[in-house]
Length: 274
Image (tube, rainbow, N blue to C red; front, side, top):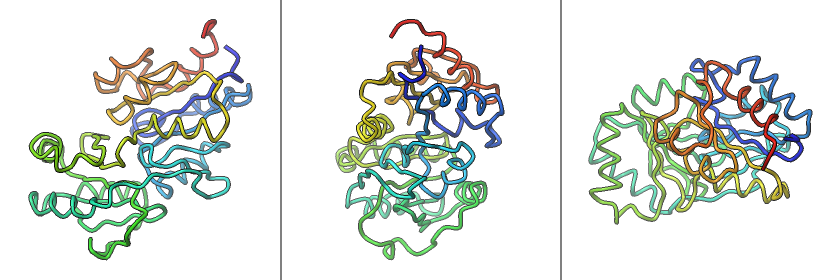
């Protein structure tokens, strides 16, 4: 297939990034070959602006990226939001209720446009911040400004998060129904705007670019990638992905430590039919 007919969006952590957060040379070479042939390549990530900025530089992204698990489209070249969707005004009260019912065990990260607020911290959240080299704003929950909340993340060990997930999606589902809840990793559970996921962000990016006639490719590894994978013309999962993600994909490639994106680019190149 002619790369100039394709737009390819890849998840970062667990897909394009290796387990130690590197981009393999073979993957970078494949991305550059794809772009040189006229393909549009970008990232779809749960990260916010600051946590994605280093990756955007390393990948030399030349089109906007989908951030906050689909709640925003951001142009790193112009350093501005092109589209965004805020989560429920009830989000602050949801954090309060959840933290009161699971005291002293949760880290909470509020992603507010260009700011990262952490009103509650635990070891999981601290490791995450250290790895991404982010210095958060540690003000109290009630001191975080109104408006601009694109999502919040609950960080904890997986067993605890299983209980939090059951609390908000099963036990008290109706109470928390004006937002979208998604497990983005075993240790992260996220609250997004209603109707928002990576597929929504991908659709908004396509409209912004006027790329409606391009063949869409999406790649990922976890639950927050499933809708993007399902709705793409070619949905791809890495072999290290969760089983449900692989079941949703049209193509399963090697794991994220072995050149998954390179394998996808090779597959696209040899496609003969749309």
